Image 1 (cartoon, helix red, strand yellow):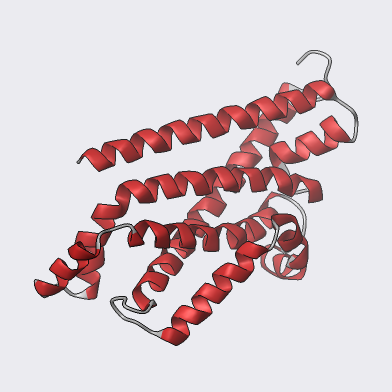
Image 2: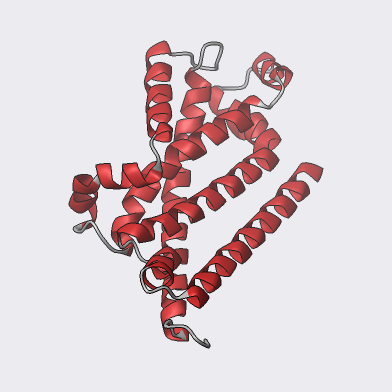
Length: 219
């Protein structure tokens, strides 16, 4: 890399750290988010298993968490992060706030995707005697899978942005490279490289998600 302080090895290490944070946080966040989204839909008034208390608590948790900017959430839960990861800095430590940030976001996206399924499909499933589990697995999820893929695509891009922001507190990855070299050491080439890298990754994620969703909707 010409006229820059970062080496190919350093760039490769930062890129690997970004993908590691993105992959682990997305996996954990998707599991929690799917559970949250499904629970919100099930317990909402008029849902399959309505429960006002559970619905209120879940919606409150999602709304409060989503209202916090990630950088504030990251700092606010440092003691919790230190307890879980054993440190408040580094790649593993960054995964904790990333997961907490993305899970409710995915939960809300999952809720919206499931609510897009026409009520007639749910009513038809109930009339056929389908259980709540069958309604989800055989009717709701198949109908919403294209929308769910687009929702996860949006969440992945948002999570990638957050991994870059984690670099401001030593989270590692491309964001840390941009802060440590591009900003603090006035390395314009390093900043340009990180920006282009993030743009390319986002475009690839969006392209893959859009094509997959289109294919699922045709089936």
